[in-house]
Length: 105
Image (tube, rainbow, N blue to C red; front, top):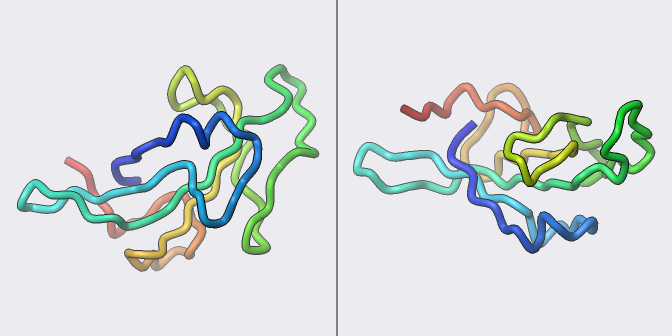
């Protein structure tokens, strides 16, 4: 999935803005540098207790976010996210969570 860099302020904001992705996804390069490969949009679910009301699932670019999913880190909570592989083509799909062309040691 790559190395994710989060913007805590944007992640705490329930609004999703196309020009302000909550995360940037990088691929480690052989020279030790990182290459930007994707954007990730994120929104915590309004309802943090099961059963979940998914009526707050966001949509961007005509695509519903993936989720609802458990926290990947304690501060994520139950959430939705949408990957956009703008900078490294994904043979699966532009919006797929996983890119088979990315590997992280």
